[in-house]
Length: 231
Image (cartoon, rainbow, N blue to C red; front, top):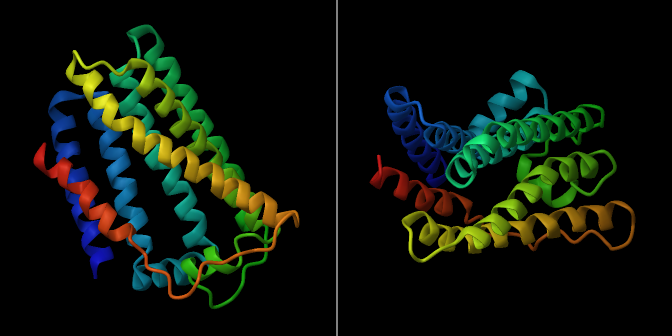
């Protein structure tokens, strides 16, 4: 239930950004809309009934493959908004094109791995992540899917700390952005490192203990609140 609520809150927050973009045509608003809309879809894919509909309609591989692509969409939206705020006018368009190209490339390669690898039957997304993600084909797809998020979070962390400034509103906001970007960079690096090590036999696969709590819906609800306040 909380997962569906989080998806709905994020969808409404995305809608408010789209409404404001229609009148202001701001890259920051466009990027924020894309990120929030993709976050909403990602949460919706965590709802078992919706996941089952997608699996029945498009095949058992589609929910996990679509999640990877949606994560890249979240990253592209974040990159557009962040670049619009922090870059100079002459660099903005070039940087955004680079971000879009990298995201599309890594998402396409990841998608190709997912659809060229046999898929376990009767397995939901969470079980797949915990027990099958390290297997050949799946691991490569997930590592490629995490490559662009890792690079983006690393870039955001570096730029945030470099441009942070207590004297300006934007500079003070970047102080708040840096810890989250740094944590996500470490998470992505650990995720890629674990998958590579488990895939090539350097370590034994170590799925989390069951049942392990999923706090992502609560985090998503919290992340949507600032968007509602500023709508």
